[in-house]
Length: 276
Image (cartoon, rainbow, N blue to C red):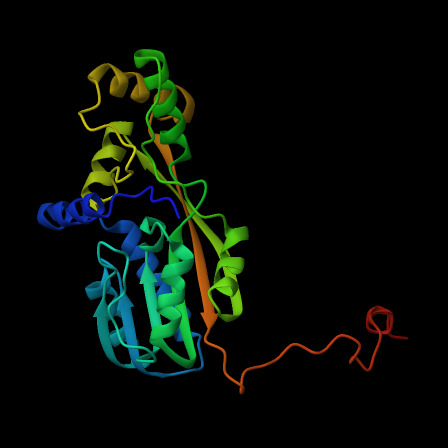
């Protein structure tokens, strides 16, 4: 596996965001937590012990406690070596919010989460996905190419919803489900979007990133392109944030099992034939 994400820089980005504590900068996390609360509410299960994973673990733990469907909640993070330091089979629910996209080895991270879960334990995860910040990526790339003669990588590669189910299966989860969610956020200018990303801890953590400040000419050209291509009639610009929601269960003999091929007692043609 070739590492593309600098985990020290990733941790520094989140630490800076925590120090800044810009009011309202957590709006995407708030939105994800609201959706998580809904998904827990419609689950018929209750959970004796949960594991909140990642830099937002405290906020996740607060939300889980408020549902009334979770007993105790432990907190855990992947360290700089992407190791989740928790015992095996310690929880029956694991939650990761807006975190897994910053792993170099997503399949390995999912395997570690599965090992931390008991049989019939549930994983719920929300991961930024392909399409996120596509407008900013394109404008920065073109601006830097025009101004500097080449472009450095600035935005993380994101998971596609079509890959999520396969990743869950590869990690050993049963009954995998992945679905897509997206939101469009409007800003006065692309500079305001960049300030929000900094306040979220979502600035560049790629190993191949530039190690010096971006030239002002590049930034101003990117902002100009953004306004030209992605502005509404009132002059405000749009930014896309897409997410994959993933769920999977640790295999257990009591779970529903797919029927064996050839075991059906009624043909598909009969099932689809109109009733008379």
